[in-house]
Length: 404
Image (cartoon, rainbow, N blue to C red; front, side, top):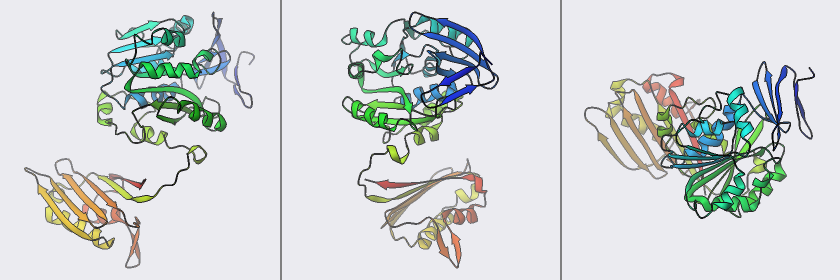
């Protein structure tokens, strides 16, 4: 028990009661410890601050890397500041479009220890695209501003929290990063607890908006970090993470086998608790319903008259008004129907050979998903199930309220 690790915060102590100390060393810069725990696996601790556990490190590293890199699949250059454990590097190396990686870690001992005690995390140090420098990251950037001006598509800062990395947390450091980024470049760095540090977050927004046009926090759940509710900070002068389309097909083709990160987590991670949302006056423009449906009979999806009938039933029951309509019957199969409404539009496109279709409805009216018909509460999904004769699990339906 004397060797068990206790993660001590100003207000909360977390006791890893089943952990044992494996290694204790002091480098030129910091104290480094490694513990082993029955549940969490090996634990890396620097200056008594928990850095990672084998159990949930992927939550952290996948979100730090994949969120920014998925906004630009044509990006070629990455700068990593810190990250000696190798987890950030491991995730970056999954992108074939990346041709050059410069990683700057101040402490060689962190790398050596990680290779021995965390080999699955420190697994990419032999990647041929990597140039590893054992230096002070902030100083290296300052000394190389002219050489690397507008060079990096991505800068990822993976640092310890406000101790060894104090030289990083300065306005000059972030200004220098903005200089070495390309015009579409993105800076992402590990930030702070969303639940515990509201005041600090507001100060962060204020400071970063002096340098970058877009500054957004995005959240991640990491059980072994104090509060478990952690965040990263996304910064760019060109890429708005909330309104820039992402080609998730390219990411899925990479087959990264992520443990935590996926498309839905990416999109939802930028939606923060109310206390952190900047209040603005917005006007609702309407609602979009996106319906992706599978396991439908070929004959149904290749039947123009039936599909048109289904759309007309939906329009009539929701008391929408037709302005115009058009269609295209493809050879050898497949149909598109588009109906313009006074309230906007409804469309369907089918893939009979796949048993799938997509339906989009946008209405600028005071539209309600459910309606009453003959004393029964119904919605579009009920109508489609009646005609398509498939299962409730075959529907993926998203509603988006549109504001400006």
